[in-house]
Length: 197
Image 1 (cartoon, rainbow, N blue to C red):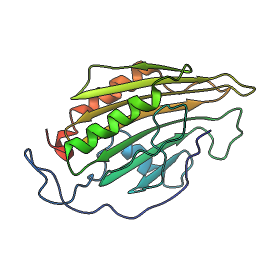
Image 2: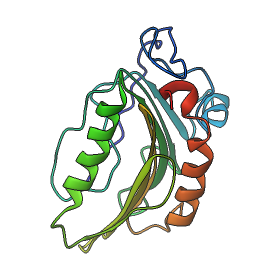
Image 3: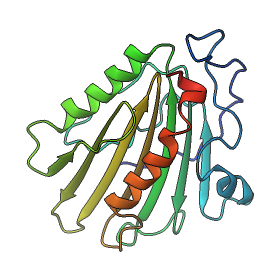
Image 4: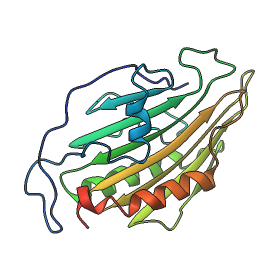
């Protein structure tokens, strides 16, 4: 089972994409993510975890086998946990991730990597929502003593990728695929500002 790392990383670097090409190192402005203001308002960390610029955090796409997706220049992760440090049976979390790459081909490679990780996995139901330049989604259901369901939708615009996900064990899931797709659609309209289009 995937775990959320309780890590506070450094500040993202300055620089920004123009509509045509990267003029400086990519970065993600403060409060750019849909749920970032909520996360930052939870100063005591009662439910939200904010990670900036991490290289070792999970990419929360559903997959049957471990793999490393990488290559971004900047990233930010938000995780909402109903009970940080709670029991495994009642575990229910959701999150938002944004990745910015130096060029669109690297972002396309990340999306292709997500599709590849779902291929041939009987536990996953894959989807391809019509959002942004491209989108991919999946639902992973693990039948075990403590069952687990993980859902995600990822969308790409230019050189930026946003991902919305949730994971629940025996607890009630926090999000539906329809809600993830709505969030991805909202973010797709913003991604050109950091990924060029």
